[in-house]
Image 1 (cartoon, one colour):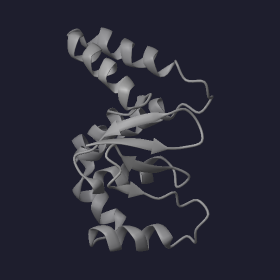
Image 2 (tube, one colour):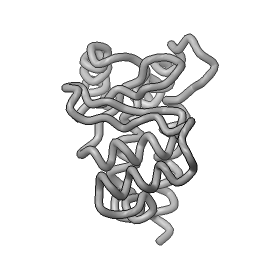
Image 3 (cartoon, rainbow, N blue to C red):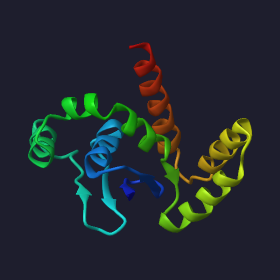
Image 4 (tube, rainbow, N blue to C red):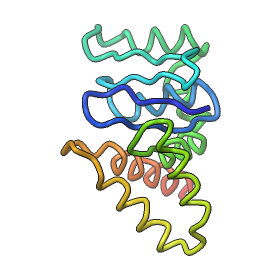
Length: 144
């Protein structure tokens, strides 16, 4: 499912296999962010102004386990969702996805992704940060 990242900077969207993975994406990036599904049926709230235990309580209430347990169970889906983080709204994703599908050379594909992310108006480069976290998760997972 597609989600919009709620943040004070540029618009970003990402794809998550389920609501729990979407919540983990938000928590991996910042408690100052939230997310809402394209159809509006699922929402991860912004936690920045709540008490420190608010995130854990919400997560456990929603998914029946702690965020740490969720992260352990969903490392690779989380990495895939973070990799899907894209500068732009839902309509932009159609063009972005079509371009990615047409690029078969991996180096050119990576260059396209980097150049797309450079279109932001904010100094806050959420997309690149998400991609770096995804790479870190995948690298750490390979070592195990």
